[in-house]
Length: 114
Image (cartoon, rainbow, N blue to C red; front, side, top):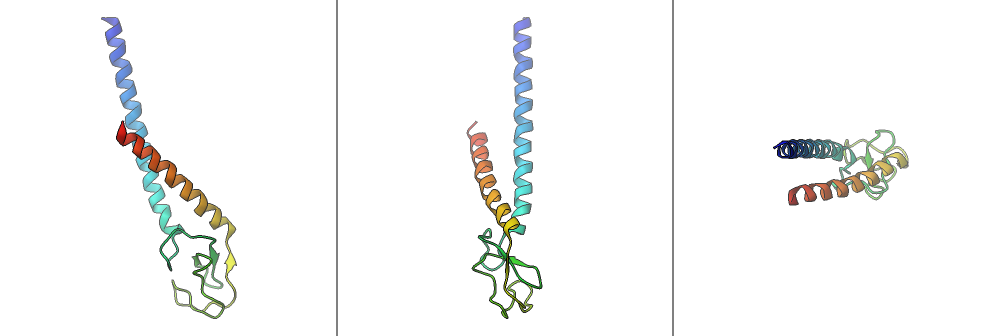
């Protein structure tokens, strides 16, 4: 009788941990989705690649999507006074975002299978 009670308690504890884990994964996915809009190039609508920031407006795009000096910013229409500035910090965030997306997708797949 005691062994059966303990087994039931362990099973309930494991189920509670799994529910907590699923909730945590869902919260992470939600926060990643919110972050995605900040990392998306508004010219090509993909996660930025080699991002650069327009001067003077400060909007960022993929390096290849940035307007040339004297061109217009695709986001606000202001003229770009000078060359765009490479944004290494944003590049690192974009790279890490892609890795996190892959890992979270794998977690979701594992949870669905279980």
